[in-house]
Image (cartoon, rainbow, N blue to C red):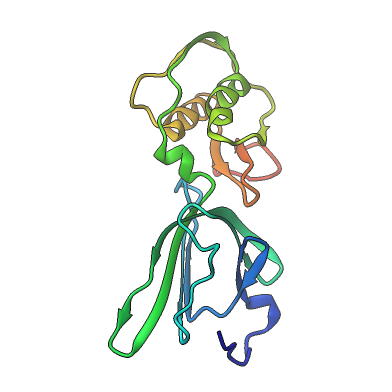
Length: 191
């Protein structure tokens, strides 16, 4: 695939790291990131003059999205569009960050007594493949009883547990589940 002349400074180049290789020649990109949106979304598009797709390009493939050298998010490809239209062949990739699994999957059903936020988070995220957890709180409440009902998403369970402790959950760029309150140094929330 021919590479166009790079007129963008290296600090602004959008790269998708897929199977250890960086892909940078996008004709357009969109990154939708918001603290209140559980799974940040992204979309990249380019023309395919030779019509060949990399063999490693598959839905569900793990990726990293970078702008310059800065890691923006770690996630997976959700959708691949490869339309061939009148004289043009293009490729559009869409995906979300690592929190997508928390939005898409049901929470494990459980009932616990005397559960801390750390206990609840571990019970929910570890079966879904997330092992990095960070809770920034001066203290965490122990819940007398926690019940997760059938149909509750993993994200809803985590959000409810974090909010009960005065915190807000998110997944950081390296796919670490985090929560913090308005008194932490990482994020200062309005009073």
